[in-house]
Image (cartoon, rainbow, N blue to C red):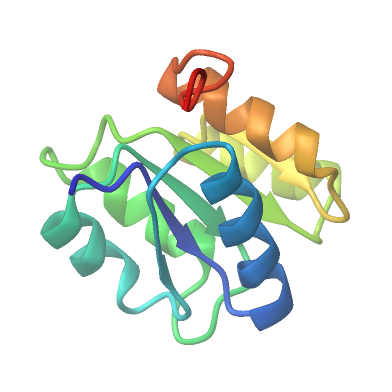
Length: 130
């Protein structure tokens, strides 16, 4: 089964909530919890998009994003940057590194689902009629 969304998030409760809400919206989900394994996991699993936390152990989300954009095989991967660090500086860094969408914690589930939907171009409910 193809993976729709890879979530890179080190906080178990946030990861669980994202996994739940995105699966409920109809997407297939995978996850990693440290920055060092994100790029290899993206290359191996080929998700349709990445939800990337900035504050990850071992390698920051910004470092991961820079590496993803520098690699021709992953450069076009849609990336939603998710962070508790909502300062203008962080938003600017994320945009300069090529983030497609920037969402600040605390976020609403609807906000995240709409951001993922806009990046994947999926219909309002993939499970309609199910």
